[in-house]
Length: 112
Image 1 (cartoon, rainbow, N blue to C red):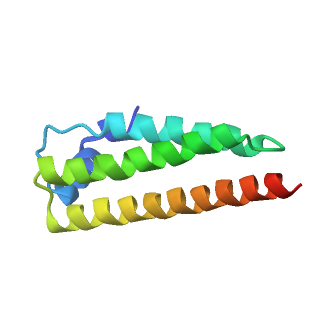
Image 2: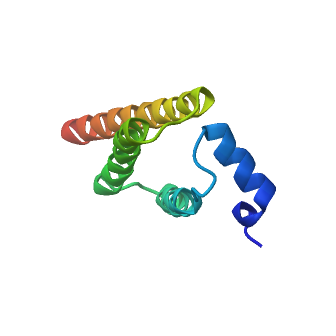
Image 3: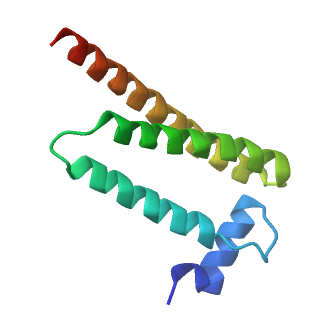
């Protein structure tokens, strides 16, 4: 049984976010599982390819942009807006740190 299918869990999270009762968060959950799996695969490599790192930066940026769109299109509760904003800011920080890491790796390669 999927945890989101459990009526109490689904209704509680949807209610906390201030979304209509019929909203399904399954797409978000599945996307996050796929993304975390990709990051796990990338991190297991002995050396991370720069283009692979750019994929992570791009996906974090996509999450940040999508968060802005969601906040404009949907009427979240105050707690829901704060939650989306906090997750968005965390993703933005990761994207910036990843970008700085790519930049540092490129510089190191230029001087090697």
